[in-house]
Length: 580
Ligand SMILES: [Zn+2]
Image (cartoon, rainbow, N blue to C red; front, side, top):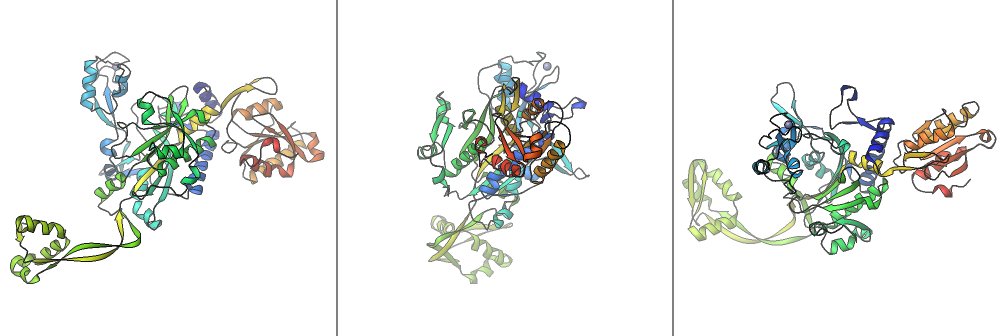
């Protein structure tokens, strides 16, 4: 594992490099180059295989620019902030909690701004660059602000997460699924965070890609239909208990984690297993992954249970790459409160339920003389009032009081009689809870590169450094190499390249330098299979296929190449089992 070497190859070979380089760059922005772009698409498409194909969640696409009122409702306008302090001398800005934690050995994250200002003063903390005095701590909103249209009247923000686009469209989505819980919707795309001063390369980007699923569930039933299938899966969990008692993460079976209450629901742990499978599939070794539970003081107030998939890195320690949370009904209820729209679903009972209800009937003869012009309004108001409350006020105060506009009224029990009746109820309305796996795609790509980076000795006895990427996500699947750059070898090789492309494999073609040199170039960017055309190919219509990881070689018929490459990528056969 080596951050420096990985980033060096990434820049050199067109995987990842800082954006706006010829203008000295801006922290927090990275380009995906020709190879990086392919890798990113492969990882996102693999994600879709899990969530869209396997889980059956449909994908939507909402705008990345959002009007202010939507993000006021979600809480981002008020709470999506970092505590900031600025040096009064050199004007550099810092995260106040980070600058404090670097000096005093204490966790101060989440403390109010005033308290952080006090701590800075109490500990004589100064600017680390110039030792200047630090200004009072202020909340700094992390959203990029913009304006919608020319008038300047409508403020917009670049979205801070893809999730809100799903919550806001919930009514249409729920109708699409015919209100039948549970259902899931996914969105992949860019999100934005105007970080104070990002210093962690691709780990902290100002523009980044998320893949999020929102799974809407019945709050009274968080069981999972396929729980039985995952019961025996083993997970490496770092629960609150281990963290608070300075213990190591534990390996535990899903069933045990649920039965002992470590993970709050089947729905949630199912998502942890899915994340674990996904990370294995992109080549991150099990021992470099742990699922860390949020501590009570770091969890959002509305959440029931949150787990982060963390990956081990040499440069940044354990880094969060996926967050999995039970967010309850917080998001939908916030949007209900601000939009005044009904975002509940109707659940029909298996059998209608019989309930006793109090039904009022009003003595209409008394309405006209008492309420005069307010009569229709009084009737409407009383019909909509809770009959049990009216009854209770009669019992306690003898009258029921209410007002219509400026006029105050009170009625006694001669205005209304109550009957107790039995009613059949077919179902009920409620606001669903949401389980959210949220993937940081850029951090995942970085982790994949970091953990697939390998150094060993090549066939020719030279040191080789390369990305041992699983074939499924490798940017380029095959390289076609004519042994010498001459006809008819080049003709045969070019035809093979065309056929591979027609069959959907991203393929390169290389004629420059020795075969060893060409293997090394392809290895470096993780091409799993090299296909060499030599003089024997002219007569036997066969080529040599070489395995990047083992140097093993097989001789296969030219017309079988696409079939075999596909089987290798999809893990349907092992390289050593290829029939020659
Ligand atoms: Zn300074």
